[in-house]
Image (cartoon, rainbow, N blue to C red; front, top):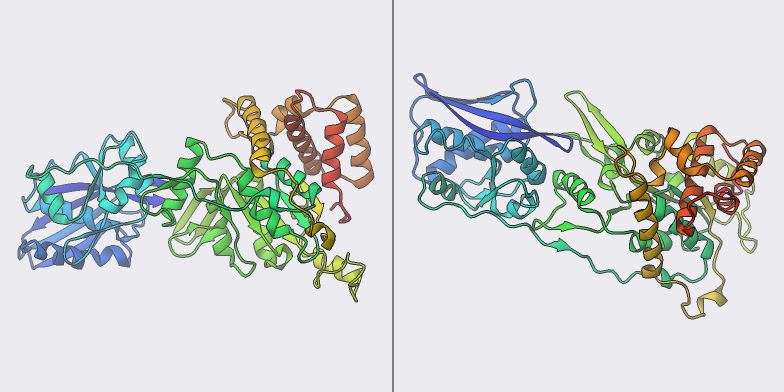
Length: 504
Protein backbone atom coordinates (compact mmCIF):
# COMPACT_ATOMS: atom_id res chain seq x y z
CA UNK A 1 0.00 0.00 0.00
CA UNK A 2 1.16 3.49 -0.85
CA UNK A 3 0.29 6.18 1.70
CA UNK A 4 0.07 9.82 0.63
CA UNK A 5 0.51 13.22 2.23
CA UNK A 6 0.67 16.67 0.64
CA UNK A 7 2.98 19.65 0.90
CA UNK A 8 4.21 22.46 -1.38
CA UNK A 9 7.30 23.50 -3.33
CA UNK A 10 8.01 27.17 -3.91
CA UNK A 11 8.58 28.76 -7.31
CA UNK A 12 8.97 32.47 -6.68
CA UNK A 13 5.95 33.68 -4.72
CA UNK A 14 3.90 30.78 -6.02
CA UNK A 15 3.49 27.48 -4.18
CA UNK A 16 2.97 24.23 -6.11
CA UNK A 17 1.41 21.15 -4.58
CA UNK A 18 3.75 18.19 -4.00
CA UNK A 19 2.41 14.71 -3.32
CA UNK A 20 4.51 12.77 -0.80
CA UNK A 21 4.16 9.04 -1.46
CA UNK A 22 5.47 6.45 0.99
CA UNK A 23 5.71 2.69 0.50
CA UNK A 24 6.97 0.13 3.03
CA UNK A 25 7.98 -3.05 1.18
CA UNK A 26 9.92 -6.25 1.96
CA UNK A 27 13.64 -6.05 1.40
CA UNK A 28 16.88 -4.99 3.01
CA UNK A 29 16.27 -2.25 5.65
CA UNK A 30 16.68 1.16 4.04
CA UNK A 31 15.12 4.62 3.98
CA UNK A 32 15.31 6.37 0.61
CA UNK A 33 13.88 9.72 -0.50
CA UNK A 34 13.60 10.26 -4.27
CA UNK A 35 12.17 13.02 -6.44
CA UNK A 36 15.04 15.54 -6.85
CA UNK A 37 15.54 16.32 -3.15
CA UNK A 38 18.28 18.73 -2.10
CA UNK A 39 20.60 18.09 0.83
CA UNK A 40 18.14 19.42 3.44
CA UNK A 41 15.36 17.15 2.12
CA UNK A 42 17.65 14.11 1.95
CA UNK A 43 18.63 14.64 5.58
CA UNK A 44 14.94 14.52 6.55
CA UNK A 45 15.13 10.73 6.86
CA UNK A 46 17.44 11.03 9.87
CA UNK A 47 15.35 13.73 11.52
CA UNK A 48 12.13 11.78 10.92
CA UNK A 49 13.62 8.49 12.20
CA UNK A 50 14.89 10.15 15.40
CA UNK A 51 11.67 12.12 15.96
CA UNK A 52 9.61 8.93 15.65
CA UNK A 53 11.99 7.20 18.04
CA UNK A 54 11.30 10.00 20.55
CA UNK A 55 7.63 8.95 20.32
CA UNK A 56 8.64 5.31 20.92
CA UNK A 57 7.82 4.42 17.32
CA UNK A 58 10.41 2.09 15.79
CA UNK A 59 10.71 1.72 12.04
CA UNK A 60 10.29 -1.82 10.69
CA UNK A 61 13.19 -3.73 9.20
CA UNK A 62 11.89 -3.19 5.69
CA UNK A 63 12.56 -1.04 2.68
CA UNK A 64 11.01 2.44 3.06
CA UNK A 65 10.73 4.54 -0.10
CA UNK A 66 9.46 8.12 -0.14
CA UNK A 67 8.73 9.74 -3.51
CA UNK A 68 8.17 13.48 -3.92
CA UNK A 69 5.91 13.95 -6.92
CA UNK A 70 6.23 15.52 -9.49
CA UNK A 71 9.64 13.92 -9.52
CA UNK A 72 11.15 16.30 -12.09
CA UNK A 73 10.67 19.43 -9.94
CA UNK A 74 13.52 20.33 -7.55
CA UNK A 75 12.60 20.07 -3.84
CA UNK A 76 14.41 22.40 -1.46
CA UNK A 77 14.05 23.21 2.22
CA UNK A 78 13.45 21.56 5.58
CA UNK A 79 9.64 21.96 5.47
CA UNK A 80 9.33 18.48 3.92
CA UNK A 81 10.04 16.82 7.29
CA UNK A 82 6.44 16.86 8.56
CA UNK A 83 4.73 15.61 5.36
CA UNK A 84 7.31 12.81 5.05
CA UNK A 85 6.61 11.83 8.66
CA UNK A 86 2.84 11.89 8.02
CA UNK A 87 3.10 9.70 4.93
CA UNK A 88 5.31 7.26 6.83
CA UNK A 89 2.92 7.15 9.82
CA UNK A 90 0.03 6.46 7.44
CA UNK A 91 2.01 3.70 5.71
CA UNK A 92 2.70 2.10 9.08
CA UNK A 93 -0.99 2.27 10.03
CA UNK A 94 -0.40 4.52 13.05
CA UNK A 95 -2.74 7.15 11.62
CA UNK A 96 -5.66 6.46 9.24
CA UNK A 97 -4.41 6.32 5.61
CA UNK A 98 -7.13 8.70 4.41
CA UNK A 99 -6.57 11.22 7.23
CA UNK A 100 -3.89 13.12 5.31
CA UNK A 101 -5.92 13.50 2.11
CA UNK A 102 -7.53 16.74 3.28
CA UNK A 103 -4.40 18.40 4.67
CA UNK A 104 -1.35 20.14 3.27
CA UNK A 105 1.56 19.94 5.72
CA UNK A 106 4.86 21.70 6.16
CA UNK A 107 7.27 21.92 9.06
CA UNK A 108 10.76 21.05 10.23
CA UNK A 109 11.22 18.35 12.85
CA UNK A 110 13.70 18.59 15.69
CA UNK A 111 15.20 15.40 17.05
CA UNK A 112 12.83 15.36 20.04
CA UNK A 113 9.74 15.65 17.81
CA UNK A 114 9.13 19.37 18.22
CA UNK A 115 7.99 21.29 15.15
CA UNK A 116 10.20 24.20 14.12
CA UNK A 117 8.87 27.22 12.14
CA UNK A 118 9.58 27.41 8.41
CA UNK A 119 9.36 30.07 5.73
CA UNK A 120 6.58 30.27 3.16
CA UNK A 121 3.56 29.52 5.36
CA UNK A 122 1.51 32.30 3.75
CA UNK A 123 1.83 31.18 0.09
CA UNK A 124 1.44 27.57 1.26
CA UNK A 125 -1.90 28.46 2.87
CA UNK A 126 -3.08 30.03 -0.39
CA UNK A 127 -2.19 26.88 -2.34
CA UNK A 128 -3.92 24.70 0.27
CA UNK A 129 -7.05 26.84 0.01
CA UNK A 130 -7.03 26.48 -3.79
CA UNK A 131 -7.22 22.69 -3.37
CA UNK A 132 -9.71 22.88 -0.47
CA UNK A 133 -7.24 21.43 2.00
CA UNK A 134 -6.41 22.51 5.53
CA UNK A 135 -2.85 23.66 6.24
CA UNK A 136 -1.00 21.81 9.00
CA UNK A 137 2.07 23.75 10.12
CA UNK A 138 4.20 24.52 13.21
CA UNK A 139 2.38 26.63 15.79
CA UNK A 140 4.72 29.67 15.36
CA UNK A 141 3.89 29.73 11.63
CA UNK A 142 0.12 29.47 12.18
CA UNK A 143 -0.66 33.19 12.79
CA UNK A 144 1.09 34.06 9.52
CA UNK A 145 -0.79 31.47 7.44
CA UNK A 146 -4.12 32.28 9.10
CA UNK A 147 -4.25 35.58 7.21
CA UNK A 148 -5.59 33.54 4.28
CA UNK A 149 -9.25 33.52 5.25
CA UNK A 150 -10.19 30.75 2.80
CA UNK A 151 -7.84 28.23 4.43
CA UNK A 152 -8.24 26.36 7.70
CA UNK A 153 -4.87 26.58 9.45
CA UNK A 154 -3.93 24.10 12.17
CA UNK A 155 -0.83 24.83 14.21
CA UNK A 156 0.94 22.06 16.14
CA UNK A 157 3.90 22.26 18.51
CA UNK A 158 5.05 18.64 18.35
CA UNK A 159 4.70 15.59 16.14
CA UNK A 160 2.86 13.97 19.04
CA UNK A 161 0.16 16.67 18.77
CA UNK A 162 -0.21 15.84 15.08
CA UNK A 163 -0.62 12.13 15.78
CA UNK A 164 -3.26 12.77 18.45
CA UNK A 165 -5.09 15.07 16.04
CA UNK A 166 -5.30 12.50 13.23
CA UNK A 167 -6.25 9.69 15.62
CA UNK A 168 -9.06 11.79 17.08
CA UNK A 169 -7.63 11.91 20.63
CA UNK A 170 -7.04 15.68 20.78
CA UNK A 171 -8.02 17.72 17.68
CA UNK A 172 -5.95 20.81 16.95
CA UNK A 173 -7.63 24.19 17.22
CA UNK A 174 -7.51 26.55 14.20
CA UNK A 175 -4.88 29.28 14.36
CA UNK A 176 -5.78 32.97 14.51
CA UNK A 177 -4.18 35.67 12.34
CA UNK A 178 -1.28 37.60 13.84
CA UNK A 179 -1.47 41.24 14.76
CA UNK A 180 -1.33 44.09 12.27
CA UNK A 181 1.93 45.80 13.08
CA UNK A 182 2.06 49.58 13.24
CA UNK A 183 5.70 50.50 13.70
CA UNK A 184 6.10 53.78 15.53
CA UNK A 185 8.28 56.45 13.96
CA UNK A 186 9.37 59.84 15.18
CA UNK A 187 10.23 61.05 11.70
CA UNK A 188 8.15 63.79 10.14
CA UNK A 189 8.42 66.03 7.10
CA UNK A 190 8.11 69.01 9.44
CA UNK A 191 11.62 68.16 10.66
CA UNK A 192 13.07 69.12 7.27
CA UNK A 193 13.95 72.82 7.19
CA UNK A 194 14.02 74.39 3.77
CA UNK A 195 14.17 72.13 0.68
CA UNK A 196 10.61 73.02 -0.35
CA UNK A 197 11.19 71.95 -3.93
CA UNK A 198 12.53 68.58 -2.82
CA UNK A 199 9.53 68.05 -0.55
CA UNK A 200 7.21 68.90 -3.44
CA UNK A 201 9.03 66.34 -5.60
CA UNK A 202 8.61 63.69 -2.91
CA UNK A 203 4.88 64.43 -2.70
CA UNK A 204 4.44 64.03 -6.46
CA UNK A 205 6.55 60.87 -6.52
CA UNK A 206 4.52 59.37 -3.67
CA UNK A 207 1.20 60.26 -5.31
CA UNK A 208 1.93 58.47 -8.59
CA UNK A 209 4.78 56.09 -7.69
CA UNK A 210 7.24 57.96 -9.87
CA UNK A 211 10.99 57.34 -9.75
CA UNK A 212 13.07 60.16 -8.25
CA UNK A 213 16.73 61.15 -8.47
CA UNK A 214 18.18 63.65 -5.98
CA UNK A 215 21.59 65.20 -6.64
CA UNK A 216 23.27 67.39 -4.07
CA UNK A 217 26.39 67.86 -1.95
CA UNK A 218 26.98 65.82 1.22
CA UNK A 219 24.84 66.96 4.14
CA UNK A 220 22.20 68.68 2.06
CA UNK A 221 19.46 66.37 3.37
CA UNK A 222 18.95 63.78 0.62
CA UNK A 223 18.94 60.78 2.96
CA UNK A 224 16.87 62.68 5.51
CA UNK A 225 14.22 63.42 2.90
CA UNK A 226 14.16 59.83 1.62
CA UNK A 227 13.84 58.43 5.15
CA UNK A 228 10.65 60.47 5.62
CA UNK A 229 9.08 59.33 2.37
CA UNK A 230 7.25 56.37 4.04
CA UNK A 231 5.49 58.81 6.37
CA UNK A 232 3.57 60.36 3.46
CA UNK A 233 2.69 57.10 1.69
CA UNK A 234 -0.80 55.63 2.23
CA UNK A 235 -1.02 52.26 4.01
CA UNK A 236 -1.05 49.08 1.97
CA UNK A 237 -4.42 47.93 0.73
CA UNK A 238 -5.43 44.39 1.78
CA UNK A 239 -4.42 43.01 -1.63
CA UNK A 240 -1.09 44.86 -1.57
CA UNK A 241 -0.42 43.74 2.01
CA UNK A 242 -0.94 40.11 1.00
CA UNK A 243 1.32 40.45 -2.05
CA UNK A 244 4.08 42.09 -0.02
CA UNK A 245 3.75 39.66 2.87
CA UNK A 246 4.06 36.63 0.56
CA UNK A 247 7.48 37.86 -0.57
CA UNK A 248 8.51 38.64 2.99
CA UNK A 249 7.33 35.19 4.06
CA UNK A 250 9.59 33.51 1.51
CA UNK A 251 12.48 35.71 2.66
CA UNK A 252 11.82 34.81 6.30
CA UNK A 253 11.10 38.41 7.32
CA UNK A 254 7.68 37.90 8.93
CA UNK A 255 7.95 37.60 12.71
CA UNK A 256 5.28 36.30 15.08
CA UNK A 257 2.83 36.00 12.19
CA UNK A 258 2.31 39.75 12.08
CA UNK A 259 1.58 41.57 8.84
CA UNK A 260 2.37 45.24 8.41
CA UNK A 261 0.23 47.72 6.50
CA UNK A 262 3.22 50.06 6.25
CA UNK A 263 4.84 50.13 2.83
CA UNK A 264 8.30 48.54 2.72
CA UNK A 265 11.32 50.82 2.64
CA UNK A 266 14.50 49.08 1.55
CA UNK A 267 17.88 50.79 1.51
CA UNK A 268 20.67 48.44 0.36
CA UNK A 269 24.29 49.52 0.69
CA UNK A 270 26.17 50.38 -2.49
CA UNK A 271 28.45 47.36 -1.98
CA UNK A 272 25.50 44.96 -2.35
CA UNK A 273 25.89 42.28 -5.01
CA UNK A 274 23.64 41.73 -8.00
CA UNK A 275 22.09 38.68 -6.32
CA UNK A 276 21.26 40.79 -3.26
CA UNK A 277 19.62 43.54 -5.34
CA UNK A 278 17.90 41.53 -8.09
CA UNK A 279 17.57 38.15 -6.41
CA UNK A 280 19.30 34.82 -6.68
CA UNK A 281 21.74 32.82 -4.64
CA UNK A 282 20.82 29.43 -3.27
CA UNK A 283 17.19 28.72 -4.10
CA UNK A 284 16.83 31.91 -6.20
CA UNK A 285 15.62 33.98 -3.25
CA UNK A 286 13.95 37.39 -3.75
CA UNK A 287 16.24 40.42 -3.87
CA UNK A 288 15.85 43.99 -2.69
CA UNK A 289 13.77 45.01 -5.73
CA UNK A 290 11.17 42.39 -4.82
CA UNK A 291 11.32 43.06 -1.09
CA UNK A 292 10.49 46.68 -1.99
CA UNK A 293 7.36 45.60 -3.92
CA UNK A 294 4.55 48.13 -3.34
CA UNK A 295 7.03 50.30 -1.46
CA UNK A 296 10.27 52.26 -1.82
CA UNK A 297 13.75 51.17 -2.91
CA UNK A 298 16.18 53.86 -1.73
CA UNK A 299 19.66 53.63 -3.24
CA UNK A 300 22.02 56.11 -1.64
CA UNK A 301 25.33 56.91 -3.34
CA UNK A 302 23.69 55.72 -6.56
CA UNK A 303 26.71 56.06 -8.90
CA UNK A 304 28.81 54.01 -6.46
CA UNK A 305 26.78 50.86 -7.15
CA UNK A 306 28.45 48.48 -9.64
CA UNK A 307 27.55 49.30 -13.23
CA UNK A 308 26.20 45.79 -13.82
CA UNK A 309 23.83 46.17 -10.86
CA UNK A 310 22.54 49.53 -12.07
CA UNK A 311 21.91 48.27 -15.58
CA UNK A 312 19.91 45.29 -14.36
CA UNK A 313 17.42 47.73 -12.80
CA UNK A 314 16.23 48.88 -16.22
CA UNK A 315 14.05 45.87 -17.00
CA UNK A 316 12.37 45.58 -13.55
CA UNK A 317 11.55 49.31 -13.62
CA UNK A 318 9.74 48.92 -16.93
CA UNK A 319 7.94 45.61 -16.46
CA UNK A 320 7.25 45.51 -12.71
CA UNK A 321 8.63 41.98 -12.32
CA UNK A 322 11.99 40.25 -12.43
CA UNK A 323 13.01 36.79 -13.59
CA UNK A 324 15.84 35.18 -11.62
CA UNK A 325 17.45 32.61 -13.89
CA UNK A 326 19.66 29.87 -12.50
CA UNK A 327 20.81 26.51 -13.84
CA UNK A 328 18.00 24.65 -12.08
CA UNK A 329 15.42 27.40 -11.60
CA UNK A 330 13.72 30.24 -13.45
CA UNK A 331 11.77 32.17 -10.87
CA UNK A 332 9.60 35.25 -11.39
CA UNK A 333 9.04 37.78 -8.61
CA UNK A 334 6.89 40.93 -8.66
CA UNK A 335 8.74 44.21 -8.08
CA UNK A 336 6.57 47.28 -8.58
CA UNK A 337 8.58 49.68 -6.48
CA UNK A 338 9.34 53.39 -6.35
CA UNK A 339 13.04 53.95 -7.00
CA UNK A 340 14.50 56.87 -5.04
CA UNK A 341 18.17 57.48 -5.78
CA UNK A 342 20.56 59.95 -4.18
CA UNK A 343 23.90 61.03 -5.56
CA UNK A 344 26.61 63.57 -4.98
CA UNK A 345 27.29 65.85 -7.96
CA UNK A 346 30.86 64.58 -8.22
CA UNK A 347 33.30 62.22 -6.49
CA UNK A 348 34.24 64.70 -3.77
CA UNK A 349 30.69 66.03 -3.57
CA UNK A 350 31.46 69.75 -3.67
CA UNK A 351 31.16 70.52 -7.38
CA UNK A 352 28.32 73.02 -6.86
CA UNK A 353 29.61 74.52 -3.60
CA UNK A 354 31.26 77.92 -4.31
CA UNK A 355 32.94 77.91 -0.90
CA UNK A 356 34.58 74.52 -1.42
CA UNK A 357 35.50 74.47 -5.07
CA UNK A 358 36.18 71.10 -6.65
CA UNK A 359 39.75 70.95 -7.97
CA UNK A 360 38.74 68.80 -10.92
CA UNK A 361 35.63 70.74 -12.01
CA UNK A 362 33.85 70.31 -14.35
CA UNK A 363 35.31 66.98 -15.49
CA UNK A 364 34.88 65.46 -12.05
CA UNK A 365 31.10 65.87 -12.17
CA UNK A 366 30.75 64.72 -15.75
CA UNK A 367 32.81 61.59 -15.20
CA UNK A 368 31.00 60.75 -11.99
CA UNK A 369 27.48 61.14 -13.33
CA UNK A 370 28.35 59.20 -16.48
CA UNK A 371 28.35 56.11 -14.27
CA UNK A 372 24.57 56.35 -14.64
CA UNK A 373 23.85 55.35 -18.21
CA UNK A 374 21.55 57.35 -20.45
CA UNK A 375 18.83 54.67 -20.66
CA UNK A 376 18.76 54.35 -16.87
CA UNK A 377 18.71 58.13 -16.37
CA UNK A 378 15.81 58.29 -18.82
CA UNK A 379 13.72 56.18 -16.46
CA UNK A 380 13.70 58.78 -13.68
CA UNK A 381 10.49 60.82 -13.83
CA UNK A 382 11.77 63.48 -11.43
CA UNK A 383 15.30 64.81 -11.19
CA UNK A 384 16.06 67.49 -8.67
CA UNK A 385 19.07 69.28 -7.28
CA UNK A 386 19.16 69.44 -3.49
CA UNK A 387 21.20 72.54 -2.50
CA UNK A 388 22.91 72.83 0.89
CA UNK A 389 20.88 74.42 3.67
CA UNK A 390 22.21 77.67 5.13
CA UNK A 391 23.18 77.72 8.78
CA UNK A 392 20.75 80.53 9.42
CA UNK A 393 17.87 78.33 8.21
CA UNK A 394 18.82 75.60 10.67
CA UNK A 395 18.26 78.01 13.58
CA UNK A 396 14.71 78.76 12.48
CA UNK A 397 11.80 76.89 14.10
CA UNK A 398 10.14 74.12 12.10
CA UNK A 399 7.37 75.68 10.04
CA UNK A 400 6.85 73.25 7.15
CA UNK A 401 3.88 71.00 6.56
CA UNK A 402 3.65 67.84 8.62
CA UNK A 403 3.73 64.37 7.11
CA UNK A 404 0.06 63.90 7.99
CA UNK A 405 -0.96 66.94 5.94
CA UNK A 406 1.03 65.83 2.89
CA UNK A 407 -0.11 62.21 3.30
CA UNK A 408 -3.75 63.32 3.14
CA UNK A 409 -3.18 64.91 -0.29
CA UNK A 410 -1.26 61.87 -1.49
CA UNK A 411 -3.99 59.50 -0.37
CA UNK A 412 -6.67 61.61 -2.07
CA UNK A 413 -4.69 61.57 -5.34
CA UNK A 414 -4.22 57.80 -5.12
CA UNK A 415 -7.94 57.34 -4.50
CA UNK A 416 -8.63 59.17 -7.77
CA UNK A 417 -6.19 56.88 -9.57
CA UNK A 418 -7.70 53.75 -8.00
CA UNK A 419 -11.09 54.73 -9.37
CA UNK A 420 -9.57 55.62 -12.75
CA UNK A 421 -7.82 52.27 -13.26
CA UNK A 422 -10.45 50.05 -11.67
CA UNK A 423 -10.90 46.95 -13.78
CA UNK A 424 -7.78 47.56 -15.90
CA UNK A 425 -5.25 44.76 -15.47
CA UNK A 426 -1.70 45.80 -14.65
CA UNK A 427 -2.54 49.42 -13.89
CA UNK A 428 -3.02 50.84 -10.41
CA UNK A 429 -1.30 54.23 -10.51
CA UNK A 430 -0.37 56.83 -13.10
CA UNK A 431 3.15 55.39 -13.36
CA UNK A 432 1.61 52.21 -14.84
CA UNK A 433 -0.44 53.95 -17.56
CA UNK A 434 0.56 53.30 -21.15
CA UNK A 435 -0.78 53.13 -24.68
CA UNK A 436 -4.34 54.22 -25.36
CA UNK A 437 -5.05 54.54 -21.64
CA UNK A 438 -2.26 57.08 -21.22
CA UNK A 439 -3.48 59.06 -24.23
CA UNK A 440 -6.97 59.10 -22.81
CA UNK A 441 -6.12 60.26 -19.29
CA UNK A 442 -3.03 62.44 -19.79
CA UNK A 443 -3.39 64.28 -23.10
CA UNK A 444 -2.90 67.96 -22.15
CA UNK A 445 -4.86 70.92 -23.45
CA UNK A 446 -3.72 72.87 -26.52
CA UNK A 447 -1.33 75.12 -24.59
CA UNK A 448 0.10 72.13 -22.74
CA UNK A 449 0.66 70.22 -25.99
CA UNK A 450 2.42 73.20 -27.52
CA UNK A 451 4.67 73.50 -24.47
CA UNK A 452 5.68 69.85 -24.34
CA UNK A 453 6.33 69.89 -28.09
CA UNK A 454 8.73 72.81 -27.71
CA UNK A 455 10.46 71.15 -24.78
CA UNK A 456 10.78 67.82 -26.57
CA UNK A 457 12.39 69.52 -29.54
CA UNK A 458 14.71 71.69 -27.46
CA UNK A 459 16.13 69.13 -25.02
CA UNK A 460 15.64 66.05 -27.19
CA UNK A 461 13.14 64.06 -25.14
CA UNK A 462 13.06 60.39 -25.98
CA UNK A 463 9.74 58.66 -26.57
CA UNK A 464 10.02 57.16 -23.09
CA UNK A 465 10.81 60.57 -21.61
CA UNK A 466 7.83 62.12 -23.39
CA UNK A 467 5.43 59.56 -21.93
CA UNK A 468 6.95 59.93 -18.48
CA UNK A 469 6.36 63.68 -18.59
CA UNK A 470 2.71 63.02 -19.45
CA UNK A 471 2.34 60.57 -16.54
CA UNK A 472 3.97 63.07 -14.20
CA UNK A 473 1.69 65.88 -15.40
CA UNK A 474 -1.33 63.63 -14.82
CA UNK A 475 -0.24 63.07 -11.21
CA UNK A 476 0.29 66.80 -10.65
CA UNK A 477 -3.20 67.43 -12.00
CA UNK A 478 -4.60 64.82 -9.59
CA UNK A 479 -2.91 66.56 -6.67
CA UNK A 480 -4.39 69.82 -7.95
CA UNK A 481 -7.86 68.25 -8.12
CA UNK A 482 -8.11 68.87 -11.85
CA UNK A 483 -9.84 66.51 -14.28
CA UNK A 484 -7.80 67.86 -17.19
CA UNK A 485 -4.05 68.16 -17.68
CA UNK A 486 -3.33 71.83 -18.32
CA UNK A 487 -0.28 73.90 -19.21
CA UNK A 488 0.78 74.62 -15.56
CA UNK A 489 0.79 70.89 -14.85
CA UNK A 490 2.92 70.17 -17.91
CA UNK A 491 5.27 73.05 -17.04
CA UNK A 492 5.86 71.73 -13.54
CA UNK A 493 6.39 68.20 -14.85
CA UNK A 494 8.97 69.47 -17.34
CA UNK A 495 10.73 71.49 -14.63
CA UNK A 496 11.28 68.33 -12.62
CA UNK A 497 12.51 66.51 -15.69
CA UNK A 498 15.22 69.04 -16.63
CA UNK A 499 18.24 69.71 -14.47
CA UNK A 500 21.87 70.62 -15.05
CA UNK A 501 22.38 67.05 -16.15
CA UNK A 502 21.83 66.78 -19.88
CA UNK A 503 18.97 64.70 -21.23
CA UNK A 504 20.31 61.40 -22.48
